[in-house]
Image (cartoon, rainbow, N blue to C red; front, side, top):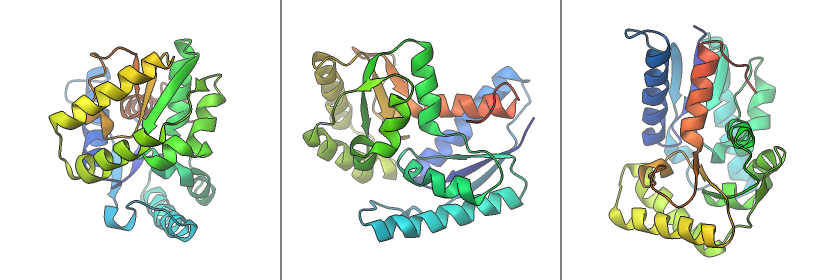
Length: 234
């Protein structure tokens, strides 16, 4: 098996999810006693919280670049960034190391294309929903995206940053997510992209009116494929 590095710490909840899911997939596919060879750097999320100004993003890029270099130096043969929003800095990080990085939106886009999804709504943090760095990756796979609803952007930011990223899961958040997804179906979406690694805590992918493409699950499956040498990084 190949050794994968995880840049974590966009919340400890997300990092824990990645560790558990990748290991469960590898164990299921390889052998009952198998575990994934992972190098994990769990970053201090307080340095990366709710970035707004460009100088804040530049500072965050430095944090992720140094993490990527440390993981590469420790023997990682490929990397994943365990947060959708931090893929805004993907190009900076990719340019700083000589090993591949599995891009979360590329993994999601390929999964949607395989299932012939034509249009979808993206739900995540503010920058993921409103900026082009994530959306253009999905569009490149032939997927049309509904425009973001700014009211939902505010709701999701509150749920993600104030609740999920500190491990708080509420029925109110679950009801809010179900309402948003139902409304997106009425607006014409064929599917939903859960483009935040914590949103799966309040969305049941098997109990909604639309197909749910959980970016965390898809990313973890791609990571396990790579570890088991069943897929190339992209």
